[in-house]
Image (cartoon, rainbow, N blue to C red; front, side, top):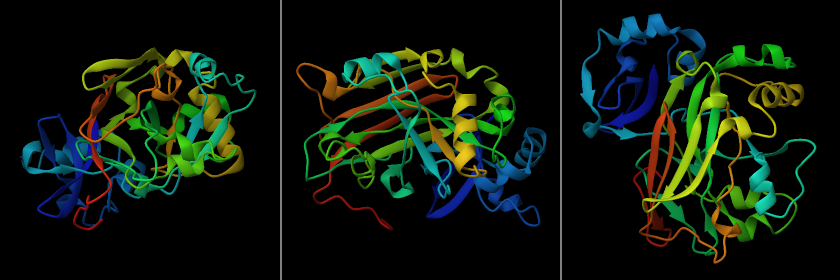
Length: 290
């Protein structure tokens, strides 16, 4: 099952999608605690969701605007240098422990929304990643227990402003420019992806392939990341773990390739789908409610 968040006529909705239509469960949420997709993941199983969706009108995706699948996560935890080839292309030693930083929801947009190239730097780089969405609380869980806490998977455009990322040893500034990253288009539930190590990630810039690798090449695997992160913080439903990007990023190329206004960036992970965003200049860009 694929689950998305969206706006229709300025009103938030959420529910399952087949990529062509969506079913808005917000009208069925009275008395259920399903206030948004985050709460739906923690309170309802696939059969219950499907039964509720059958009673909802199918809305064409042409009538909606995709939001971040989880518009209000408590935590977005990202992993750096988690593919050996990517560590190699950056000329940084393969880490002995996960390198973790945070992103803020305001640094992301949903599927088909433009990402914003900042005015203060021209080193805006692309990074395609697989993201894990937590479905039930996890605190101090073992690797053996970890996958039982996964609700599903989505795609992350973890784009970075390299100049600001390398101002110091702390990557956070370069990872949190306003609307610089993207996530979506939806969450594919874990029952449809029994083995995420088999997934292949492909990033394309203006139709040209830039990254292509499989998730089994992660240095720190998903169960380990969940176990490790749950050791220092309680992972809650709707929390997002972005697992790292493979080789092929722009700043490691010769000549370097950076995102610029007018570009289109897409990240494909089947069977999840394709996350697609255009790039716009920050100067003069504004959206209602931003």
